[in-house]
Length: 541
Image 1 (cartoon, rainbow, N blue to C red):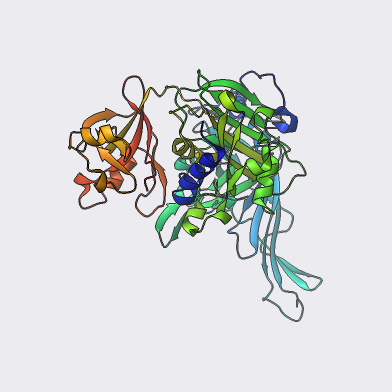
Image 2 (image 1 turned 90 degrees about the vertical axis):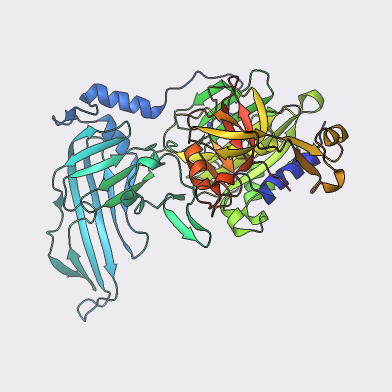
């Protein structure tokens, strides 16, 4: 049986050196499993379609009811349009009947005169009414609205106290009577760059393309929009929003699903907190995905270590560390390389990696988790593995923890994939056609494997870093990939680590002059038909 010290060293190696990743309070204590919950986003969409007859082809232009499911969803969000600099912005709030109110303000304290020594303020207080909408996709709508009414006539001005007020129209709503609505959960890949350029940060969620000395990359981009967005296509002007309801509306999902898991528990509470457990049929590994409500515990921004220790004590009893000293924590403050530290962030939010053991003897489990906090909620995602399991090893677990993402939809809170991993293959892999790969099976040989050293004709004195690879002979076989097979690489071009797919894998290879000879040492996980379920680049010293 491996010791806790060995587990700590494994996590330190994979995170500190290679950094593979780039329930309401009492609900987690409950021992009874809850029934599978229907995602909220689906309920709201179905209710809208039933009440209004909406679909991708049918318009709803009739008299708006007093309360409408779509407008009710919008009423849970406070919309903001601002660049984040310059002291200007438009705020908009929607009511369940589709009416809205808001204001625009911009200050120029340097624009003074004897009559207004305190400067100039541009101001617009307005009200309006959404009059109908058309559904374009499950998450995207077109909203119609009447011209807003203004408290003060635009293009007039007055001096109040020592300040000049110039009254205007609301920046962000001008030049159109139609806005594009992006519901929470809208796939970020479907959002136009012109919208992303405005909604680049909302409550810690970064979705803007950024640059640094290492090139271009998306910093911690969520897979699904974790807030509600409005877009004025006339001027390419975008509103993001902040959740103003008491319900949690931000969820953590794994974009690379686990093969062969089945759902043991699926509990989505009324307040949006949740508790999901998935495991393999033999009980060799288990995945727990929990969101806890806010309490008065240590804040993550004050001390990531204290926050993590406190959060872990909120886990179900069978998952809790017996002693805080048994927990090993890795956060951005424990990483020397700045670039590596960036990948501790989970879609803009600081996060912590933690590992510990539970149980003993035959009941022992290795646990590795990623913990973060956002909008007063605590998110804990735990992978638990039997020491004898060869399917979910330390590096594979870190790969999956690096695949977590925030989203605005409670769909896919379960981490269970449809297929089961049947075998593993270590291979040197080359891209093929975007749907398959070419792989040469290899054998990992240590200095102590005397029989294998002799079988493959390897001189022990030629071994570097305590291992060698056997079966190097240019004999490649073709392996089909399951659709959207996740591929994880430690050192792709210009990025420290990256999650990609087969097309991205092939595109990366073509960036090299000698791309025909380009390849990677990868660990392949195969289903019973020999198709690749996922693959990752293992850490090699």
